[in-house]
Length: 543
Image (cartoon, rainbow, N blue to C red; front, side):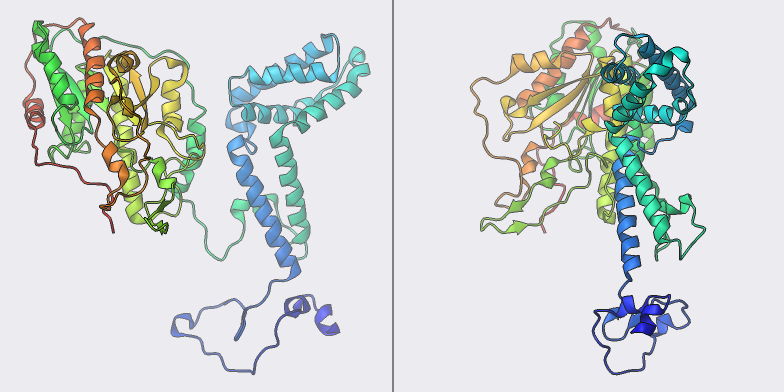
């Protein structure tokens, strides 16, 4: 026992408390391990050797470093000033000016220091934690070189107290202190094993592992999304007007199957009843692969036509409802059968912080995720030129859930940017049951150049009863209950068509111009016919 304790490899620490080994046996390596060097040491009967106390402490400290690193990542705790020198210089100057103003103020105390510097940080128009990180950088660099003059010497004790108490109020300051303390612990624990260990090697993303780590673009999407959520428009977008000569179009993208009393039906009816000659130049087109297999938005021919027509200002109305299956909040809800046993349903593919996909998904789930994201982004791409040229735009999607950890397109950086300041788009939340929906489905609209909120209130059905059942789980026939909400109620289609038509009537349109292209004519003809035999299938077939 003394011999084992005195050995530098800590054999006693490994063996203490372990069961006695069984009888010695000969161990033969399987063929796939023959010739492999540096296999981990194991015991024949009782599995791998126990880690030493030092190794267990190293593992604990590394896990805490990893946890602190992840906690501070979205709050700019590890942001470096060299990433944006212009912003850093501007903020350093603002802090210097605030320090001079504090020395000239009355009274000169801790409270006035806190009020002045917090007001300065809030004036930068950047996230609060980003401003706090800039203040920490200033306190560690610029302020550290501050030399007071004779009039300021008497206030230095107050300044030191005010500075430290303000730093202690900052969450990321405490995170950084905790992180550096853990690094010191790790360095101390590894002194005997690696005396020349550098700080870079202590970083959690550089830690040793039996598996060879490599960076994946998929894993970077979360960090890139956090950056996009800080974007802002620096100036109002430039607008133009629709051309005075046709043809003009009203597009319903991701329309689903054609059916009676849908958006296409009401839009065509409003155009037909218009007495003005320019109405003859307006063509309604519904696009979806459920109508015709050629209506694939990924088709180069169709996409180029849509983008060119939108940029030319010829799309006067644009309605779209990108597929919401991968965004649905119902994925987070547990489901049970009639006997109360839990059922296995589609699991969440997105979270609020990882809105473009969470790690660990199967290939089938990744493919579904890719389709849902691509259809949303292509729809948003078209919304912008149409809105800038005066066309009425409406994008429909489920309202953001009350649970902040659940994903929603309205929590993404792109939608936040488009809605910020209300320069181009606005949003409105409605309840589809007020328009005849079979379930309670709070819905949010991203809209531009129309008054759809007023139209929804004006044309809402009177005397309807709010459904009590939630669209979660499966029905008795095995289909998902969310299936009933895949198609807009007839009255909601009328509201959308009316809001777009009132916008079109306010535009100065001409009754002349060239006819539509042959491709546009083919699309219009394919979407004009209602096939009662066509239906739609749920996104997941019951297993």
